[in-house]
Image (cartoon, rainbow, N blue to C red):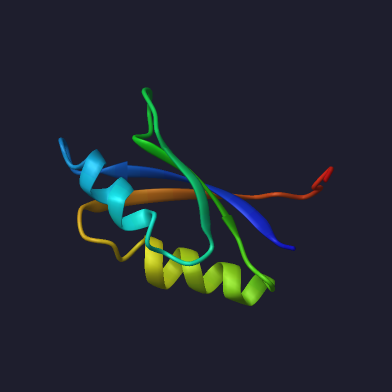
Length: 79
């Protein structure tokens, strides 16, 4: 099952709003607000790589108040 970690920068002060919206997106598992360079880290899973790309490109990156993302696709899942 394709998995990725998506690191998200939001507009200042909008972390909570974006986190709430992320929790509604199918495929987004374990979104966390974090301190550091990025504001949110989310694990995303999908049935296929194409579906994973679709979730990141069309659902997460287009959320209101998301400024930028960095997607790290998992190469090996030890589960």
